[in-house]
Image (cartoon, rainbow, N blue to C red; front, side):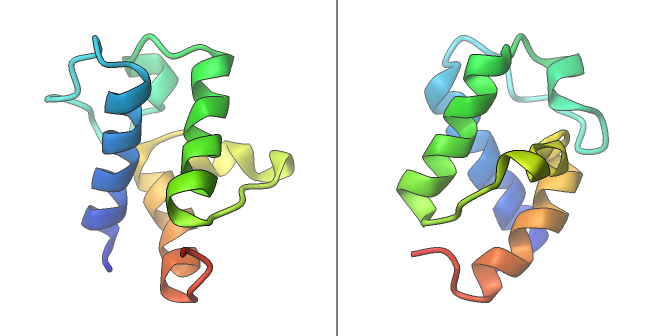
Length: 86
């Protein structure tokens, strides 16, 4: 597992919950909500899919860690590597 793979997992989840979004030019360092038409429910869906598909729980206090693809990768990579993901 590496950061690029984690970024792709997040993009795949976004593609599932927001299929009309164009994800071809998402900048990894820019907040996802600044680039895409995601509302708070979409964001919660991302968190729920991380739990459902990969067994990763993201506490509400840490939601800010998922603001961009880069911050998501930095936050989630250790969780994947530690076996927190099923």
